[in-house]
Image 1 (cartoon, rainbow, N blue to C red):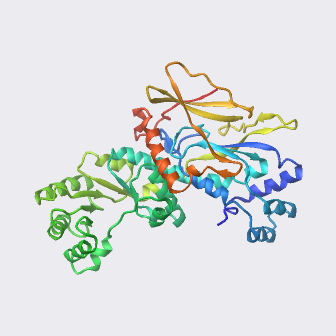
Image 2 (tube, rainbow, N blue to C red):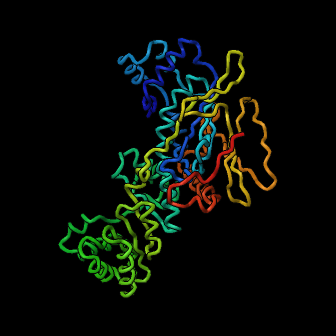
Length: 438
């Protein structure tokens, strides 16, 4: 399915005007970065890179799209002819999916002609802004859970496409499973789910409902015990499934107190191995509040798919360098107050001391024939952050599909592990790493 019309009209009208001025073919460098972190958080987690590469590959104008553009008189005939042959043939580099980023990090760099690269602005930002917002919020929840598994279950709180993207981003950020089957099929994410309150209400008694579920799914299933009275529900669950019952789920009530009461009741009934899963509008703060209780697992819905209050990462897509009339590279940058950017093509490194990140170093250079090496102090090591994602319009296969998701998930764990302890605080604060431009 083409992604060509998942864009803003002004991308196409800029191409029309650039074709008329003779500047559409100028080599350019566009960069994606954020001026600040969403919600004054201390670090962000990049997600959506693999989906961006898929979207760029599918960015084609077929007959139906061209006919509609012509009918709506969006652009002139010369531009329609250009679009009919459009295919991105440039280069893309950036941070690996799952990488930690801070303000100013050049998370994606697009190199190509102006016309080729400017057309991609909206589709790139629409993917990265949402997926990264979800991953950043999810990473905070994972940190708050302190090793306990978390399932993503927010499909009913997002549109159908965003639900799949959110499950993917949350899994990259460290969630253990999703309730969304399409996310499981497309991205290789483990899926989970048993029953809702409606299943209990369908039956003539809670016991009848539990017996039906155990008969279908086995004693290892998780029974939802708060449709009626929780204490009675726990007693019934153990009586029906035995002390080998896999788990119980709590979806309401004073959760910290309730978890303790249910754990004591389960242990008293001999179900010492039965796990307690908690759901009910959780976010990173409520998860942290439950950390001192005997909870075993969490399920998060609304908060994760909405970025826990910050539904967009705030990324922008800016032209930072172009060739001039003589063929030389020159930096360009917006200078507006509050929205200024740094011109010039860039690469990035993370500086570490004894394995702990201390700074983000952004190397700026306008000579695309080779960026100079930047000296590193003797007590620090530098980890390169910028990798090749697409060459001559062809994506690097290692970043795509379920394998790309698995690699991003693994990389996220390693990148977060490098952060100083203060970065994991849930309170609002300054970015965990300063940005050094050289």
